[in-house]
Length: 465
Image 1 (cartoon, one colour):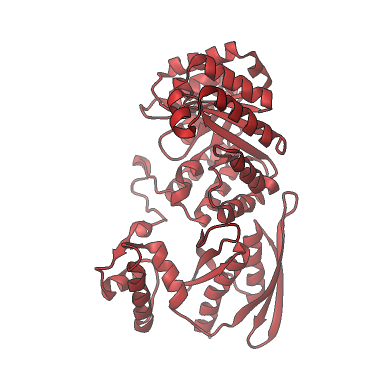
Image 2: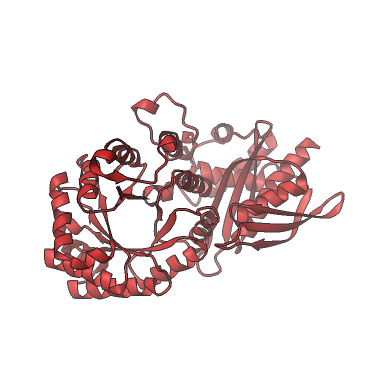
């Protein structure tokens, strides 16, 4: 039986619309499903993106974590830095090979593009044993250049070559023949794995992928979101037709539908079978206010977000809202969350952060030692392990407080640029049916997250007292 590797690109297509917490949950589910590789987009924000990769590296033990290197050597360095703690790291070099793509995306002619391919692959290979080259828009490339590009990547040390039908214009059998032809003309492909990526513009991506893995390829890029090969449909194809075609995969089929539905709810995708099911993540993230909205509208939106504020706090939130509308036309749910965390339900702090020590790496479970000052007893300390440095820190605080609170949301975003960028963390905890939020800001994202968590905890403790 030929084993087919499945690389999931769901987060490459939806990362910008998801919170830190939502992305982590998607990775957890993909790891449970035994996906061979979880692909992530190029590092754009060094603070938050690298933290995210390092956080998931603590619990992704079986699958490969693949990070795109963008289109320059600096992107390779960022990818390598992010993957430093991953158990199975992969750097992904994605470069266009069609004349139009090279000219307008990279502003390079064919000879220079071959040099760039060799340079980026070699740089990645020097620090990472697993390097993938994706020939983007390969079906519209000039035949000889595509062959030269594949050979250049193999000579530089790649372990996986992926041919991409970015245009999505080929019929399934035509694309399979296209892959067979490349494999016949590039003898060096016998040394590396061969993968395919198919766009689903005409609804034929799943059929194209199925035929190519039967004939030539051994890796397919899939996603839970639309626009490419469907993870669910492709996995079911291998399950139902694998015996007749001599194909198998490591996917846990018994978990497939449940996990697909869970990820679909997170990224707000529904199908006919799931249309009547309530979506856990409501449309609050798509709600907006503008400067024409009055205090009543702002108060109504805070209620939709789950907060139960006093009249005094509602006025404070409204005043901050008006200040923000002077700088931007629309204020969304996430901005309103941050305002509530900063100005509403302010209470005397029961707990203050004194210090914390984090230990993490790719061969150890993350641990945190947190020391707090408690108003009535003085210094208290907690030590705990968790799935990543932030989870470990939150668990250590729970150990100190003796209470577990439901983490409703957790967000991290950069508020300044540069090497010493400030990161802002927002934590929402749910207790007794009510939401309590806290915010923290620091050049250290872990410190910002701890302060945000303490801010929410202090509000809960104060109300309980």
